[in-house]
Length: 199
Image (tube, rainbow, N blue to C red; front, side):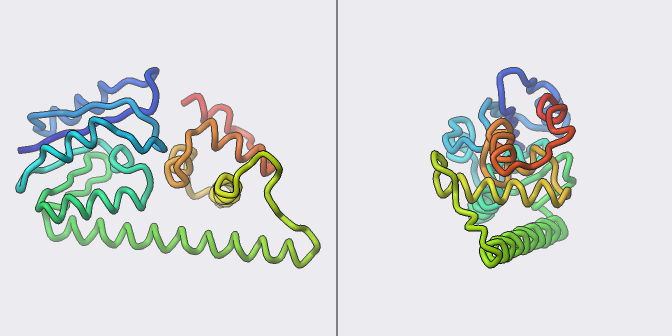
């Protein structure tokens, strides 16, 4: 059985595009949810994961609808693989029910993880260089250590220019508005970011 999962971040967004595509893909049941990428409590996702059975196929419009972050996505995929359940992503053209699909997904995940590690290393090196020049680079009052680390990652990802706003927010586990706040906190020149926020 093909089971669909569709998610939007806010009530202002429309699920129809995803549900139409999932229906066209042959999904017999579709779970829908309104929850931000950073939200850990996804009732419908949890319900779906508890109901699917061996041999079922989970279908999503895009992989980022399924996982809060790359780490969470890999955890969900591993859980589904253990239960011998496949994953199909319509937009990403990924199908883990085939050997080539599984290979492609695993390679893509490895490269994504590798790229994230490189960015972290560059961020760490940049902080160390700043400290060597006498800049402490510590977090400002009122911001937790975790938030400051995410703000640094947000700045790095944004300046790299390799990821869109939605991808950055998903990767570091925050909403787009929080990401905007982090970039302002880091005094990043945002440019067209206001326009991207409204899309």
